[in-house]
Image (tube, rainbow, N blue to C red; front, side, top):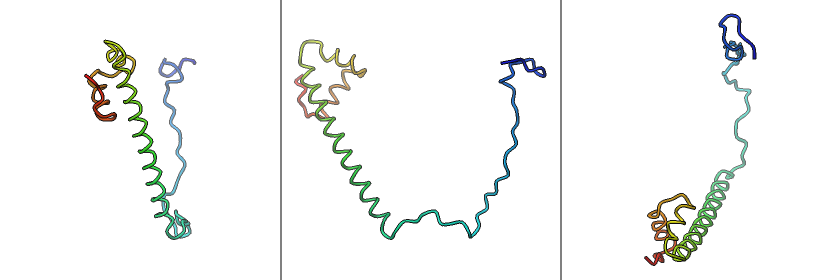
Amino acid sequence: MGIDRRTGGPRDLVYVPRSKPDVSLEWSSSVSPRHSRPEGAQETLAAAVREAARERDDAIGEAQRRFWSRIAELKNSYRGAQTDISDVLGITRDAILKGIKTNAGDTAGR
């Protein structure tokens, strides 16, 4: 890092304009089509993606149910456990109650 003689500032902060290559954005008829998919492939792909997304959502939902069921059990471990859980998870005590009610049924046992 040196000093720029023109500005007196650091050399690496000096703007150096660069020339841009001349790029033509015009398309000619010789350009090949973008897609080369077989007939019906898009519908097949869309169905497979929807199925994968459904499986992902089901797995996430099941993981949420297991997590919040376990949190519901742990929150009744001792007096003040819900406060300690909220500190560990970085969420409010109300968020814990809402998560339990929404995902694990009303097993909060207030």
